[in-house]
Amino acid sequence: MKLDSQKTRGKNITKTVKVFSNDPENPEFPLSIKGSILEILETRPLTLKLQGLAGSGLAGSFGFTAGSPLDVEILEVKGLGRGLSIGELSEISPGREWELALSAKPNNRPAIMKEKLVFVVRTSDGIDRTLDFLVQLDHRDRIVLQPKQNVKFLDRDTKKLLENGQPVEKSILVTGGDSTVEFEVIGVKLDERIAGAFETRIQEVMKGKSYRVFITLSEYQSKPTVLGKMTIQTTDEIKNEISVWVMGQFRQPVRKTSR
Image (cartoon, rainbow, N blue to C red; front, side, top):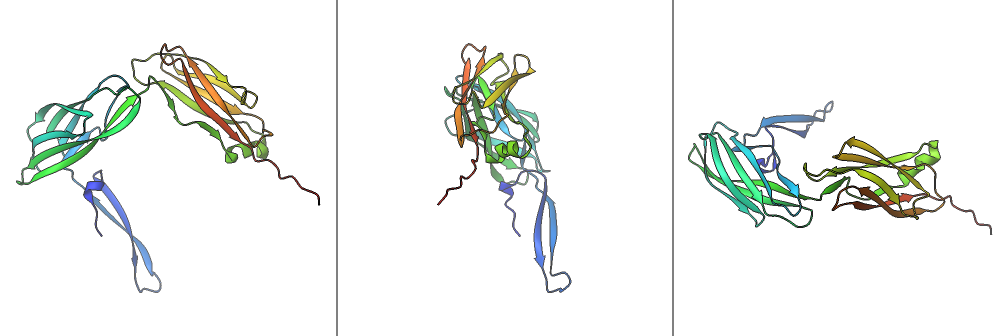
């Protein structure tokens, strides 16, 4: 059994293998193998992410600590890519703990990108090593929808209306893309293609920061597919409307044909 430690994060690892034997009463049984992987450098937080509004630069600081008994000397830190800039590296505890400042240039459109951060280090056993870390650059929209995708009421959802007559409801969380963004959700519009099929309501989660929009389907529709736009209205001067598609699928009864 081989384990690629470069593809495994975390100290406590458990792997299970199946063992086969010629024992007629117990021909096979699972065997759990537990172990620990000591990383040369551990990160805080575990996922390195720079986050901010699209159109503005991103910046943040991250902690690194020696993850094994070996002391570490950092020889070089570099980014592989054009989006990531390396800032000041401060040694907090000699050979054991550091803080690194990172920044990224602005991106005009909301996007999530990944850049590789490379450390060249020398450990106290005299070996030079190259360590790779991924940094996520999250250039966020002013107002973010969760989930981001369109709202779909598929057959497996709508058939519940036929089974027990209970309304089917889904929701979208509306939040600011950055802590500096304040807004209110003041209304929801449904276009005429879906206005008669769906109902909406707004719930305040945190005033000026986050709201939840509920979309409710109460009646089974006579069309196989209902599709239209839902527009969320906000008080934000820049992002005062956000539109998503809402779709409902309704399996129609098979019509019997006479011969």
